[in-house]
Length: 195
Image 1 (cartoon, rainbow, N blue to C red):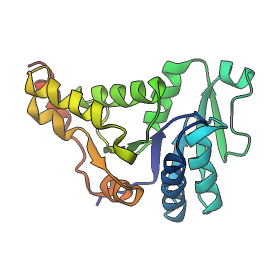
Image 2 (tube, rainbow, N blue to C red):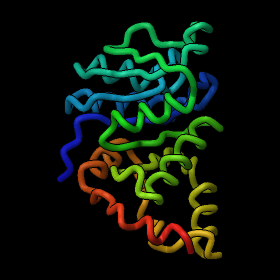
Image 3 (cartoon, rainbow, N blue to C red):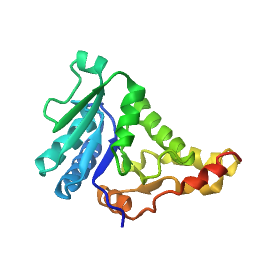
């Protein structure tokens, strides 16, 4: 069992999405809060980011949000987090979120969420991030991406071993179980980065 004290959650800031996504985000937040697992997120005040954070806080947990200065200037930040860390840019935001986390869970989202997920997968492939990466595939949202990753392996753009970088959960409960049971990645895998 991995000792998990903090989890970075990537997810949408959109407010116009199906309620099933909000329900999954709130359930995940509640599970994290009940287990006193600190949520690390992008400090957004709307969408799934806010829903997850609010659920963690309501369940007695803590939330650290990491947000670039320009977003604070726009007033996009959540106003009630346990801790807010302001950084200069998006690159620093992603690095800080990864540095603070014992695992990553990706919920559905747009380009920003997909970019964050693919970057952490790349870092893990290169041995730069060794912790569990879980994709919470609510409503089969990530099916096309998972198919694309499988095609990349099938056509030798990635090795088959790289399919173990991420794990897929269909429920928040399964996602929380996975972060505790996925083996920590071996950094020696970076020798397989080239194919």
